[in-house]
Length: 317
Image (tube, rainbow, N blue to C red; front, top):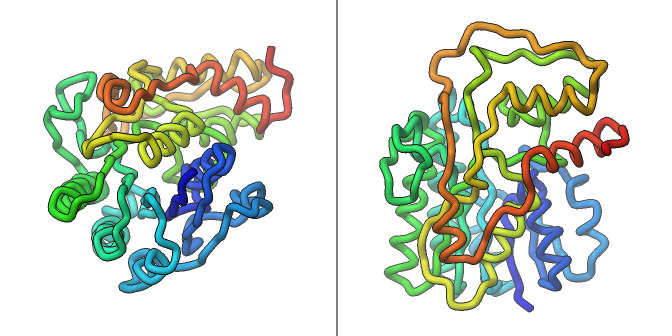
């Protein structure tokens, strides 16, 4: 079994990735500055003898490199980031620091200390409102935010370092991830976590536009498994792959599923469509299947049923 360093370990995707790696028998070094991550997300991991947690800022020069030099991990899964598209617009300098400069420091730590593999949390945001659907890895990339642009730049930076200095890089282009531990209190949270919170509180949801806009929703447990595969599977070569289901779900579909399990909830309200909203986002999962042997297992209806049962304490049959 390997030794894996996970940045952003206390975050939504990070904590699930840590739990999955530990369950698979790996040693895990967690790194987080707790800007948005929560120590409570690692409540299970901290009881493991195979887990250590370090509070440091990946964007601070020398901080990560020093730890990597001591620990000598087999792979780094780089999940630490500014995760808000909106915040990347209001504070582009912070976006550059946390989403590009930090990635450069990860690449340098890998180069300097001989790390064999880096797995990077990229995003479907690199495609923007691409006309080709489903989005394919070789297709047009037209990010419409500093966040998406930073993810695309970071992919190029890492792949260039890997090709030059001899380590493998896997760029994971996540689509719309949902599941337990996603913070619904943030205005930048995924639509499913916001819906779940409002339904749990007995309040209705607001759907902007006609509700037919679609997303490719993928369960965080599937994403954690994809990260583990990318970090540990033998004989992988460098590249980028969509981490998605290849299935579309509309906002109306989401409301119908929530209403089915929580029938006492108010009906959704509609408001005018918001400028800039992407109407359709769908990924092609074929490359991840071909290169990594990864296919998402959880269908949206099943994932939502489990999330509703956990968060609302209702029996879902």
